[in-house]
Length: 108
Ligand code: SF4
Ligand code: SF4
Image (cartoon, rainbow, N blue to C red; front, side):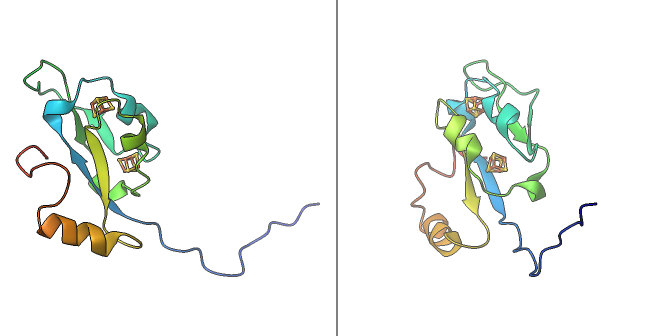
């Protein structure tokens, strides 16, 4: 009979991120929706100016900032900014100084 093993130390807290979507770049392929391990995204009913349905954020609190959505997006239209852990301070500085790659007008 196998014994169930339990960790001897507490698991580290999950990282958290804030998803950013550049709707005008999106071509509605839904890769980000399909591949998100936390099911953060759903297809929206809105159209962008090209006539595609960009994703929208259904569960913002569930994002673990893995950036898989960014990896699979062919248009570089989505990414996540860390809210905790490594990179958080740098991301915050970049947001505050407007040095993220896109203007705040484009990003939802
Ligand atoms: S960063 Fe990861 S968890 Fe967050 S929306 Fe993208 S794929 Fe999902
Ligand atoms: S992967 Fe990129 S282009 Fe495709 S739906 Fe998501 S944001 Fe839009």
